[in-house]
Image (tube, rainbow, N blue to C red; front, side, top):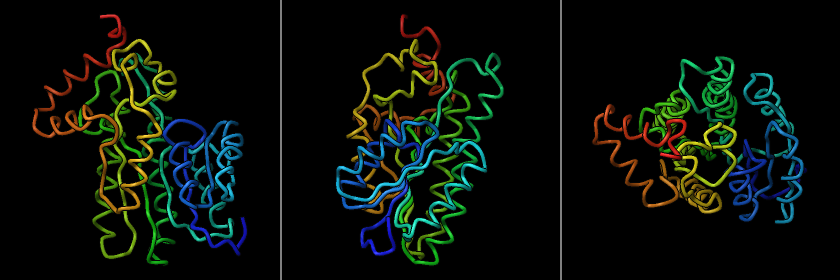
Length: 266
């Protein structure tokens, strides 16, 4: 990647697999050069695969649950030789099970990756985007943001934070030339549920959306400057809409039926 490239430049976090990889593929297919980031070694292979679309693709292996990892990413962006045009803040993790019985360290890592990391990274890149008067930010939240999440308590809360944060700074930036879009998928066919130890839940065992379609909807919403998109099946849109009119106690009870460990066999 060099200073002479005339292609727009995008960064995608959590891009080694799943929705993040497919978001990166959308950028690559639409003529962007890329910097893709993940904590696992698979990010190098992902970068090689993405390069077949013709753009320059750099990769960075970094743990974005740490401030050192986020700062390393920001410094890599600054030294890339490209002005940043778009960033997909997608890295995140889930955790299934009763909160009281869970591992506290795992809960805190979820909060660091899903909440603190997006705040840190956005604050670092935002001033550069504002100075240019141009840029696009995509946050991967979830329809989980619309409801309390029994047995996924910190995950749903983290996605609610992210949605609120995105909507707030979108309003702050309305005259800046920088847009903020929130991607809100439902259950998607990735390794998310396995990593969250949620395979034995009704939600984990359910039919899921195609990450290619979810990423396409997210990319199109970002490029159109929309505030958010509920991506995937029509069921996701119904669930998100219902959560706005039903009491939290009701939607929490509904969520419990989907997320309680062992519910896949009930």
